[in-house]
Length: 372
Ligand SMILES: [Ca+2]
Ligand SMILES: [Ca+2]
Ligand SMILES: [Ca+2]
Image (tube, rainbow, N blue to C red):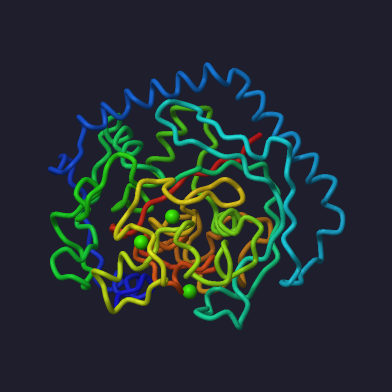
């Protein structure tokens, strides 16, 4: 069994990665990215024509959020009880989604609120780094990628910038069940079939930051990775159960691509959800139901880099939902669990520390942005 926690520990010991400036051969490449970019440009133009008020709606959602927060702020200080239920402050535009450029990932405006990060001490599968539970405020108008960043989106960035492709991606293609860096393996050939609609994998935290910088250069700026607190907040989307859909992984196969019956056919000794989500490795983004905030795949499919440096607990986590930079910044936090997440790793509270330069066939990312 090779769960993601074990994989992260192994990675810390054996990680090696290199950057190849050339384009390795793969199922998709610049030509496919050109086709993808043309198709996206057409969709974006149609969407802009159908939503001439998108920018105004966004500004209104941000203003509404600020007004709600001002009204709710009284009494927030001193609320420490981990058991207090989440408070979700929905504006009338909370469901708004938008694109800021043809190459940009689609964002969803997320309601502000308060919630408890981490897991209760009696949660099955819990590890000590998920505590202590802390009451946090997500009190900035926020938009988050509706989906994980896709292969097509990332290829468009590569084409535009010549950013190097991180190689030596961790995979088990050489020896099934033994995950290790492998020279043939990179985002264009991760060792399993993908199309432009699948989430990009085999990207480092630094690659994600380079993509963020490029998107900021295409727009008015403000894009970043979600903070770890924001990620758990949007992944839970108001839920307090072990999984956002309920207490058991076994009822989650409509909601998340994780280790399930499909994965068990290849990895018979892995603990698995006792249902079939239909995907062994990555699935096209948005293949599973959106959560209560309208976001897809915040559990499963690929693990996702967040902004925070690695920490062993929530003791030093800022209460305002911002990122921790006080930890070990040679590593960063990853959230969501992936196609390779066993049930314990797919829990909403699960968090994993990976080397910042980890290149891994289970890790991608999505964007976030403070709005207004
Ligand atoms: Ca699966
Ligand atoms: Ca995910
Ligand atoms: Ca854990």
